[in-house]
Length: 335
Image (cartoon, rainbow, N blue to C red; front, side, top):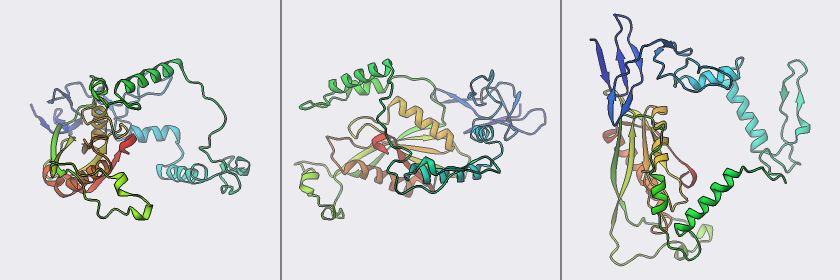
């Protein structure tokens, strides 16, 4: 029938016309072809897509979402907000604004208006003003009742988990809630876990404790009797799928949780990593670094660095990634 299927995309030949590319959807790790009719054309890239594969976002008041594919939606949004300004011009405006108003103090009275264009001209920041763009004021924000209730519930769950003076840490309640089933998890080509052998206790001979007036005896945990030499560190890898001979970009991600909570099996982490994977059309490596208080600092950042070295040295062979296209980040404590 002329239909061919490959990882990451499906090419469907339509009566001798040029091939139409459509994103596939996965159900229980099994790839299925998109069988919907190709009635929509992206306004940006002008490729044909089915209604399922177009962007679902829309502006308030719009009856239907715009006929724009998910990959082109950021550019579409920029065209709507700034129709007379290119992406590079808008980026330059934002950078100037950040330098003058976010990272430096300013005075609103020093701004002036260009009479010819009527636009606001940003002047140099005032060094005399002590207030910046992110300065706080003596204004109490209005907190919705739902937020107050959820705050009390969260405090109760944390207390039940032993996070209080004299308490014994118990992650079972938080882990049970974090592994609940949630919706809107995007499909990816493959999800696998890998084990990386790392030192159980990292050497700290090159740490500059004296430079920062720190006592290593107060920071580092003393060696324990019968302590193993190595530890099996787990990483969860989300793979977009690639063509033969193609190397993909990779993001190394550390989850949040105050260094004492969280893991790579968290349902919200799974949803976020799947979105990252589809967004970059590459590989996402979620690090299951060791948690405190069982493992004290510097175990957590050292675990992350060990994964970074593993991805750089063996990622091309094992994961099919480009060692020159590595990004690293995290949320909350992981960032």
